[in-house]
Length: 377
Ligand code: SF4
Image 1 (tube, protein in one colour):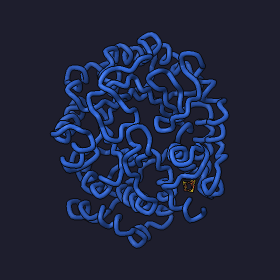
Image 2 (cartoon, rainbow, N blue to C red; image 1 turned 120 degrees about the horizontal axis):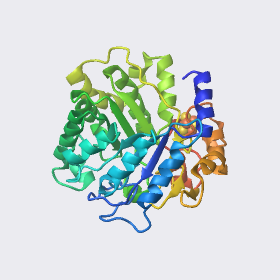
Image 3 (spheres, rainbow, N blue to C red; image 1 turned 120 degrees about the vertical axis):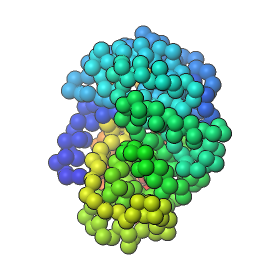
Image 4 (cartoon, rainbow, N blue to C red; image 1 turned 90 degrees about the vertical axis):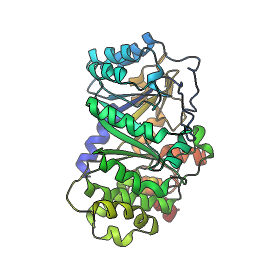
């Protein structure tokens, strides 16, 4: 990314987020092993009411010089009986909106048609394995991978822009090559890869090691050539890896370790050697830096994975909190500690603030999943 582009992006993120995640409810019929929200079957006490939700959307629409995308998430956003009303309200305000529903019997043709008609254009669905045993095991429901693939087909037929989200952890990292094939073969072009952070129910799951994370990033860089647009969550060091190999593309295969070559195996067998010039755009977003998260009870957090409360939309102006909270200012200005604080890549990357917090209790600390942080430690 050019320095001038990065400067513009960071100046914009100082004023307003690019993405606002709203955890509309904690209710969800699934019980995923790594759930950030520690979702529960029914709604949690204190969820924002319909009127409070509308007021929150009003505030987003009124944000000066901003046009954030609102992602209705959860729990399962489809568990909110008033979701259509909220979406219609957001549409009337001109907001850009997406949904991140769970795949359950609530994900029905009629509901999805209504939401599309009310202005929702994008949807993200989670797929954590290419094999039923892996995905179903993580999602906690037998047959869930089949339902997930059916949901993707339905959403695609209805005209939604699709994104698949995958949480990477020790138990599924070796399937990433097969998951990439699954996306390519269904013409799904956007893959959001979340490098698990031990928070919520994910506390007991195993994060991948820094050397593995480096190879996964190299693999994701290679996917550009297959037409996939990659977004990472809690792995901003992907941008470092991307820049390194943009400058030296021939090095990718030579530097790739055993995991990189293992992940490339299914892709090359089914779709040939990487070729072509597709080059997906990179956003320099991070926790509290172009991203903000509003919890089910209105609590404001830098992201869904960084459980530090900065205020509450019930009592505070989200605009003021986002623009002036000292922690967010420090995150955006790169006032980091340890190796991340000394790293030459910190403006572009900045490390996962959520992982730093989960491991050290310091949201400005170093990201232990980055090999560069280990090298410079
Ligand atoms: S050391 Fe920190 S800032 Fe540097 S690339 Fe790694 S995670 Fe990013």
